[in-house]
Length: 432
Image (cartoon, rainbow, N blue to C red; front, side, top):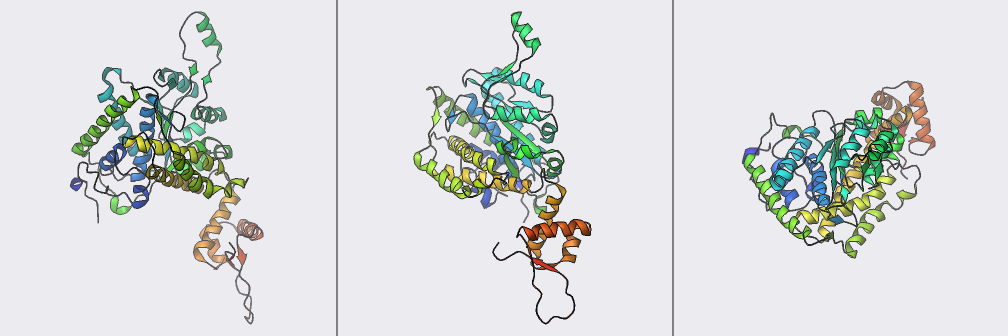
């Protein structure tokens, strides 16, 4: 059955959000401002609901950090990347989230409003100069949201650009040592040469094919990719819409929820330094569910996703803190933690999928395709694998030999009493 946006309520926290499946329902708050935003935005466009969640989180983290509110011992920052094919709704989700955050901030800040989003398509020196203007006295940090609809524009620049972004995510002060700045300082001029204690969030998007062309191994192995939460949405034909449905009344209702929440947030921030509390039992939940799950994998030196798995644990703490705040609480409970765990697990699964195709050589990609063909088909003859991959006989023979030698596939033994020479068959070993 197709979803009819006109039939959706403005905002009713007791009703399920249309098009949001159980996996996403259990990876976001069950009520509060995030829930209110999703209840509006999901019905406006056919963009996957997961994209809308990934697009709004950096804006929320920015608003919390701007007030100097800490989660897990530091100001929150959330970097997300929406991954999918062209026309899949990534830019639409970004546009919806950014316009919503801007309208909300204009309403609550009035003349003091400044655009929280900083476009990343320019040069890194220009981005750093612009970033330095976002220092917030209340937070004691530089706070804004980097945004771009094509992450590979960053990756295709000098290696130092990705390295600088890693330092910014980690909260390290960046000082640009340029002669022109030193001369200006000596002359008593004010210069924007320092990004002080950044607590900057980021909102990225890309298509997998672009990542395959541009990304390098170091982006995965402890680099920029491990500092990003990866959201890969799926479009369903029955959910496609010919146009956007603004659902103005629902948007107004969602903005009202956020403005009311702002009053509460300003109230707690006015009392002095605010730290969202995470009980020891919740920390234990993160350790058991995430670290415990990945412990065996973390000793595998060849697993390029391990750095992301390690960073996913403090990321889950940050998300759980934001989920608690979004429902008006300064205390993270088990429900917040479980929902945050579910979300970071989905993001890690997405990155694991990218790991199979990004910054790997041609033979590695071929081996992955061969292995997937054998998994799906069960015992299959070489001709079937050849037709599925469409490569030369020499390349296929090399891939099969490597997989067989590594024990990932095996030849099916020839049955006794069979005359002639049957075609070679391959299967996944039972021990695997």
